[in-house]
Amino acid sequence: MRIISGLFKGRRIQVPKNLPVRPTTDRSKEGLFNILHHRINFECTKVLDLFSGTGAISYEFSSRGAKNIFAIDENKRCVNFIQKTALEFEMDIIPVQGECLSYLEKNSILYDLIFADPPYNYEMKDYSNIIILAKKKLSNNGIIIIEHFKQKKLLDIPGFSFERIYGNNAFSFFYL
Image (cartoon, rainbow, N blue to C red; front, side, top):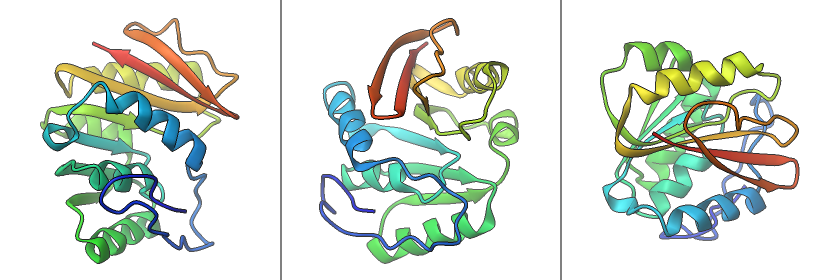
């Protein structure tokens, strides 16, 4: 895995083989961040990375100057890996071990951008639950981005704005 752009551009991160993850591909990350580049000021954006896995999305935000990044995952090994990598690169990422929907329910912080990459076997009601809970944690003019398998179509969920597909991955954008 490598960081696509920014301060840490080109840095490779060796992901342990025993992590139960499906990292976002470089092509998908590049497409996503090309879209975001024209829509947000990274340095002023508070980011919540749900189902963070390896932390790849958090590292990309940090590399582009984001300072307040919260990476949530329920797998302790994933959280430990993110913490180790963030310390190594001196990134402002706060890894938290916890179930993502519970975190949304209990947390009182407002975020400018919420990114979620739940397991691809999620049902439509599960995606809807993420959006419903995330709306309550979003600052004015905030963005929610859901990464999902391209066969799932989230366009009927309130707040849906557009979708971009990269290979088998899709990103659905919600402006609320």
